[in-house]
Amino acid sequence: MSASAIPGATAICLLALGIAGAGAPARPQRRAGQSRQAKVASISGHVYNAATGAPLAGAKVKIVKIAPCYVRGIPQSYTATTSADGSYSVDVRPFCYSLTASRVGYAAQDYGAVGIEWPRRVIAHPGEHVTGVDFRLQPQAMLSGTIYGPDRQPAEHVFVCAGRRTYSALRELAATCDRSVWTDKMGHFRLDALAPADYYVEVAFDMEGVPSTGPRPGWTYQDTYYPGTANIEKAQRVNVTAGSHTHGLDFSLVAERTYSVTVVAQDELASRNSDFYSFALDPSEGPERGGETKVHIFERVPSGKYRVTVLANRHAVRTWSAPGGRQLRLPETLTVGGGWREIRVTDADVQVAVPVGGPADIHVEAVVSPPRALARPVQITLYSFFSFAGWHEQTIQGPQTFDFDPVFGSSYFFSLQEVWPRRLYLKQVRCDGRTVTRQPLTVQPGGHVTCRVTLGSDSALISGFITQGGKPAKNMAALLARVSASQRRRFAYAGVGPTDGKGHYVMGDVAPGKYLLFAGRDDRYGSFFAPGFVRSHEAEARRITVRPNENLVVNLSLTAEASHR
Image (cartoon, rainbow, N blue to C red; front, side):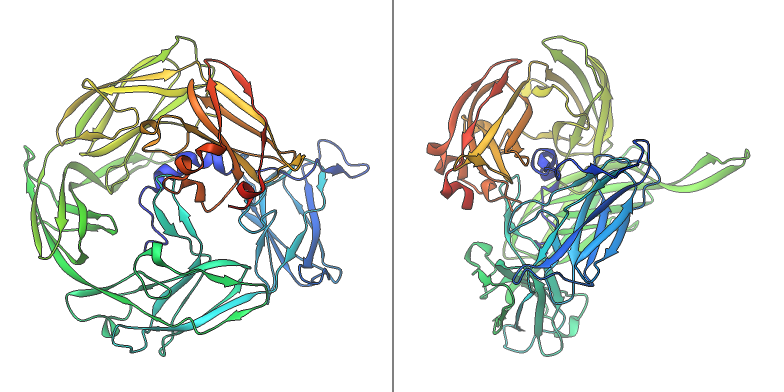
């Protein structure tokens, strides 16, 4: 369903470093007599009832390790239970952690997350006692109702989800899934343990789970939003307050005509001895494995535009040297070819033949401009949003030539990954005479592509403070967008800098150029990725020019309107 699988998730991850950074509690105090070399730290705090302020006994606090300070041997998580006065304390290994508190009858809460603010991470240093990690749990709210089919019969085993609308970095609108349940035989559902917020209620039908109650042959049920629309833009928000029970959310599934897509693999490989084929239909269908027949049928495909991808595979055996000198033979699958076609499904079944050719090779010359030695290795990545395309990467320490091989036909983007701070940015990518810095590179099966990737070494750094009413603005962010609308066509922002507890933000690896700099809420649901956000709020932005190698300090003042949108 759209709520759980959003095309373009890879691109979202590319911005995650800029969005998800969050502040930590004040510097922890060391217990008297403890050595700096002590290997054990501790985290303590209280859990309260947000409505009354009373301590909550018996609440569970889960402490889970998170990036970026990975260390081998650290337990995945710890759990503590609050005592009569609502307090808890747990010894942990020094690490970075996220904490969540929960109790029956209350909505769970991530530490530092209030409303739409991002949670905060807790850094436990060796021998230190992190105090004041407190939670205020809201009494749970509930939503309930009944889901019907188009014939007004109760819809059993329908997945019901309550969440918030969110925009991806590619400005695609979808819904989160904060709480979910399945309807019973009478079509009833009840979503509990909800925090106060505005929710969208979405349902998705499991055709495989209960086919006997599904739509008639040739039809499917779309993902449907309350009060009964398949268009998320037309969905109605349901306001939930602490301790409330909103009932009577009754609505019907939306039926949609479907068609079959028959895919025929035309194997044009020189050897023509593939053992089996794999098929994918993007978006939303597949990947699926086929057989030697070279034919696969996708059933119940709604109208729309799709990309069909086919891979040719062979069974192989890999010899592996085990400890003690033993030789192990392990089966593996080798992909030896592939191909793709774009199709449109309208008002009839579709049959499409997909030529399957050998893999392509991409020869890359990476250069640094202006020339300088790189202090750290940098990873150049070639990625795609489509099934089977794969993720290709190469780590370099300076100017270098290398090959991405094998690469199967699809559309790819170049990016820089892993090293932080890089003090580099992707300045230009040209492949076979065409600039594809921010555009997709289309690779045909069996093709040969030559690319020149220029890494800019004259990046700038932007920092400053964001205030509101003269006070530090916590859980806010600086948003950096290109002035040129064409340059922000693929990604709305060139940088996102969240504030820490003092209202301070930092954005590194900024390419020289002209920008719009905004201040706004550090919105986990991505409302600032909405189409047209930059254009409609341009009057509120600070226009800046970023020069090569500049350390630019820009302080911003947050308006009351911007802090609430």
